[in-house]
Image (cartoon, rainbow, N blue to C red; front, side, top):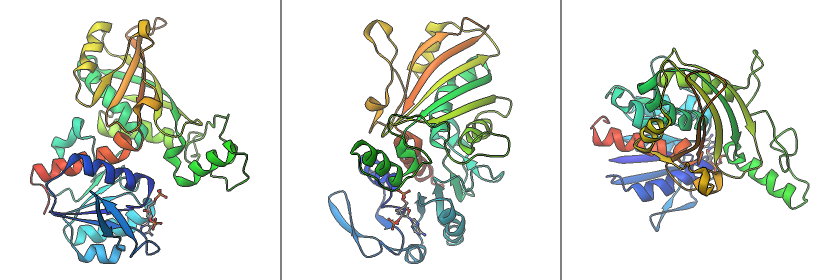
Length: 329
Ligand code: A2P
């Protein structure tokens, strides 16, 4: 079993390496792949030093699996080249997510749809993953009609340049800007670029990807906001169901959902927060309460490390699944 990590030096790539070290997949050989700028440089994995290779060299190795986190353009150009040599590509970018013939996978929810022929598998957007992890078990029980989502997204979702902008602003240094405005002490209602309908791409990803993963009949409307938090996305979610629910049962369902951790006790100020989700693979949910302004409607608060379950962990879990089920060539 040979696995390539494409974009190994990036923010998500670095997290994938950490998750792979923890998951210990049955893999014989790893290849660490980045741009030609990084090729030849050393990279550490499991206390061993590997040499970074470029994309051409990686295709020649014909890995069984390639996990891509090197941006959409690299995925569009190179995923088909890996596919052509028999590699199963797990892609973190948005390049293939909405392609009708590509699976969009959160393993706990829909990995069972995967077949040997699925050679390019898309990893959903970070904000979508943590949302559907909570919606999925509730949809099964009560039928989700509509979800209204407000996100509070960390700057790590915009990459290294954004991390530097926040650091510079905190230290009073004038530097390169990743955002059109200061982020320290600010909230930007602007994640990814704007689309023609006035929503941002991030907001439309929440709508479209949720429909694709869970059910096209679920309506989602979102406002995505960038906040000066270094890691971890939070979401305030209002969910209207087809049928009524008992709060105790909602808590029980979420408590029993694999990959979801319930943190919900107002008496002890227990609720999910990004600082405490950092470096963890689970999705955290709390502040569970009835929306008293409307029938069959619930409010809750979801937090996850956007680089972990929102990206690296989900991708590694897909890799673990396809290896375990013998779906790779
Ligand atoms: P490199 O470090 O050599 O530039 P981030 O999202 O944190 O900016 O990381 C992007 C990742 O994608 C890095 O590992 C980066 O490698 C890699 N990358 C960017 N462009 C390419 C490319 N054209 N070919 C291969 N890897 C790329």
